[in-house]
Length: 171
Image 1 (cartoon, rainbow, N blue to C red):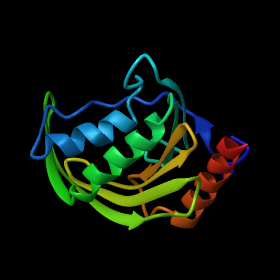
Image 2 (image 1 turned 30 degrees about the horizontal axis):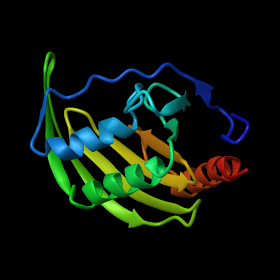
Image 3 (image 1 turned 180 degrees about the vertical axis):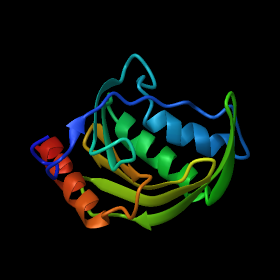
């Protein structure tokens, strides 16, 4: 928490996953990375989430430790899926809702062994702007998500937070 700008407090995140999507592979890839459950028993996971208010900005960090080349494989698979996820729809049934999520690749952010980032925007019943940073450092994979429903997202701030977290992984 010392690496975060002032005003952030821990929060218990909750999410209501969509019931359907026009691109299930994209939705599953995004949800799989920030899931509160590791993808397998062989993967160790730690998460931390912080917010400044109910409308954001929110910061979520997910760290996963894999065996052997698992982090490299997970990184490659996620990036390949995301590169094809330009825009897709999501729908909820109870309560009813609809949104379109757009994913724009921002490329590498020069962190860790490999990194990739994207700008995401959700419009519809809910409106959210998000920055996603994925970093592989050895056998670890770090996902950093910063999002807000209130105003612009400070991408320089997100990059600084990601750099601090990746540096700690490299130690």
